[in-house]
Length: 97
Image 1 (cartoon, rainbow, N blue to C red):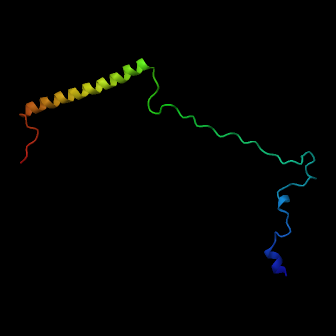
Image 2 (image 1 turned 45 degrees about the vertical axis):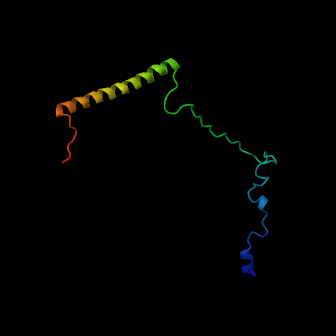
Image 3 (image 1 turned 90 degrees about the vertical axis):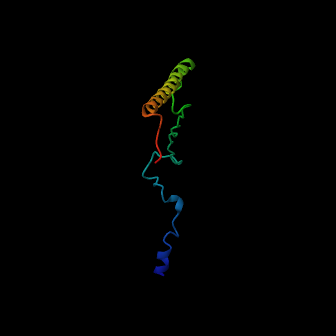
């Protein structure tokens, strides 16, 4: 009989009253449970742009135009330098042997 009682230890336990404190210990508590307020989660603020800052239109044209012109100029200088080196070497880039 004792073995049968040990298997079912929670048979006569009222699950609703397990976590509650007795009313004799707290005289000012009300009958409704206290619910803690949760703070809202932080909303992630996604910017409209990721890689480049937003500029006024004239300023953007000047800055981006200057960058594009610098790239084109560097490409032209590289091309001139390569042509000059080819002329110095006799016009042959590589020889197949």
